[in-house]
Length: 300
Image 1: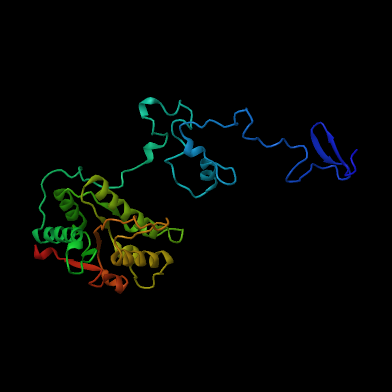
Image 2: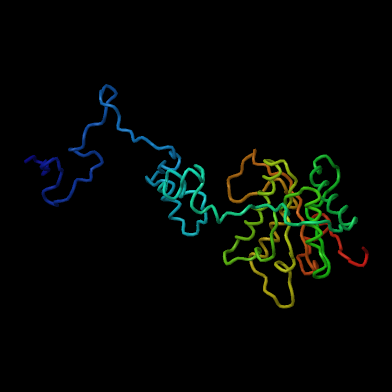
């Protein structure tokens, strides 16, 4: 036995007095590090085709482990693809990039193929929608302030939304449509982030598909308006601030990622409908941010 009290027994280093494994950073029984002259090949694990998913972080956890740890994660685009799940669930007829939950995905934009037949479109309303979209698309070459938001407000059930959809179909526009029910959530900040995500989705349609697109929010006053003694929530305030920020900075939209100089979003016109815009926050509906169109059926 050595004077230090360390015994080497069956390649195991223990302390005789404490009878526990040696926790020294440099163990006396650890194998010597591999030298460059060592003829043995390094022990490397061969990664599969999904090597980006198998890459480990600083704690040795891979991507799918970190994804599973996020209890609120709703990302269903990964984790169930070919090469990760059994081929029984993902066959060749589905494609290599398909997974078992593809039926739950929906297209973000609307194309209005379901509208059949000819309908009357009010010429004044058609000019207003078309001019609003064109002015926003060419705003970089104009020397005037172009409002990003067009507010269409009028009576209930008079065809504001349907007439707008008819114009979208006639102009070949694929908009991203939201409703007042998506402007509130049990999580603070979630609806504001959703508005920014939908705005960026419409921008990607313009950039990647070469089609005209816009963000349309139906019944905005139902989600953000103040009626009587209704309560103002933090989500209402965040959405109002988000729409005001989009109007002031329509090409720099963040959804939480780090800012990059190349991350420039295309300017996307926003169209909102409502019955009473006087219930909205006044700075949001001022002329610099929102252009109003009063819907009056008797004038047509």
